[in-house]
Amino acid sequence: MNNKTICVALVGIGWAGRMHARAYNHVYGIDVRRKTVCGLEENLSEFAQQFRFESCTRDFGEILRDPEVDLIDITTPPFLHADMIVKAMRAGKDVICEKPLTGYFGMPDDKKPVGNVSKEKMLREVRKTIDELEAVMNVTGRRFFYAENWIYAPAFIRACELMRSKGTTLVQMDSIAGHKGSPASYVKYWEQSGGGTLARNLIHPLSAAIYAKRLEMESRGLEYGVKSVACDCSQVMKHIENRYIEADPVDTEDWAHVVLTFRDGSKATLTSGDTFVGESVTTFDMYGNDAVFKCRFSQADLLDVYFSDDKGIEDEHFVEKNDSNIGHHRAIVSEEIIRGYYGEIQDFLECMLEGREPLSGFQIAREAAELTQIAYLAAEQNRTVVL
Ligand SMILES: NC(=O)c1ccc[n+]([C@@H]2O[C@H](COP(=O)([O-])OP(=O)(O)OC[C@H]3O[C@@H](n4cnc5c(N)ncnc54)[C@H](O)[C@@H]3O)[C@@H](O)[C@H]2O)c1
Image (tube, rainbow, N blue to C red; front, top):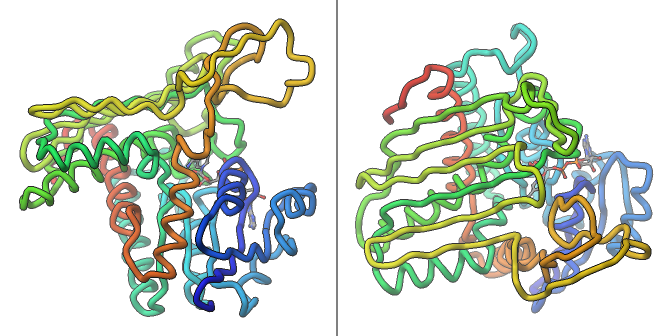
């Protein structure tokens, strides 16, 4: 890496890969060389052309062996994350990785389906994997960047800035991450996704809550920590007839609710589900002792549109997961900015050049992955887990 050029390889060209690829096109002040994109799809070379990657490959090993690549950006399904991170760091590359950092995906002696494995075992194994990742990071000296876009959403960043300036104590945070399901095929199976909506969606508000509370407590000179975790996880849509929700979990949950209690007694109540018909719901409300901050990541009121029919705009989406473009909509504008995708990539690349810490790094990735497993344990044992 010279002073101003970072050579990137992107792995995965699904929904997340596309968001990251777009973000590299908008980086400012740093030269990014988009060297290689890696994925298994037929349209890989079209993707490479569209997002100006120099080459494409189906072989992850090719990227590892390329001495020019400085940074590998991993947007593959969760069960591949830990192995790819280890291989990338051992090959001397810095790493960006999508959420979740890792999870439990089954062991040879497990009875199938993997979702039925004891959550104590899952927690133990996930902690082991995270410790191994940390050890590899320490031995190789490579950087890790955790692509948690909620932490980079401008509304959330501004709320955190104001909370800090005001010296507000957060009393309660309340958030919903709701969708009408995911089109990605791996989400039905625990052995590929490491869980259901809790591991996949609730991890966003969970990460935002622990980030905000840590920032608040540490900026007031207090020691941050989560004291306890309660959780309810369920398969809701199995029992409800519907035509509009893409939830078909095999051994994963499609609805989850988590209550975190922090060291100072304050709370976060977080809900996620593949059970929300209509456009996605992404709200994050922070109620303090002297201020309230209500962050919205998918809805915006900058542009109202109306269409009599959808000829010519069939491939547009005005809001994530809306059913149709016909009729009235509040169209989201600059989605990649509002939802934090541009901000995270910009921060990570600046961190590589400047040697500073990212807003979202290994500490958040680790705590979010561990709390996710503790929440599964709480749900399985129907009790509040005290840490
Ligand atoms: N931050 C967000 O808003 C957000 C949204 C969606 C997904 N995600 C995360 O992004 C990741 C991917 O999710 P997705 O919905 O884009 O999934 P997806 O299934 O749409 O895409 C996965 C990609 O990984 C590639 N891939 C799979 N195995 C591979 C291998 N062995 N070598 C190279 N490439 C391989 C596939 O070809 C595909 O391009 C997950 O970790 C998910 O949790 C994050």
